Image (cartoon, rainbow, N blue to C red; front, side, top):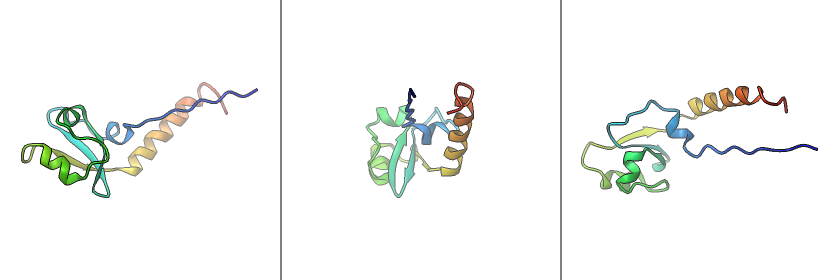
Length: 90
């Protein structure tokens, strides 16, 4: 009998980027917010919003827009996969 475990990382796109805790930051792809740090969330920014809506919710120049880094995300997933192999080869 096999057991399966599903892991979700909904904030992976923002967690794999360098932290910028002093100002609100969002990760965008195709001009849509896909993830936001805590400061941005407290200002009302939500995943799915357009980048222009996110900019409108934050004072001029305070919001840091970050492009999604798919290569870095894949690298982090590979590291997590190698870590998980320490528990099971399947």
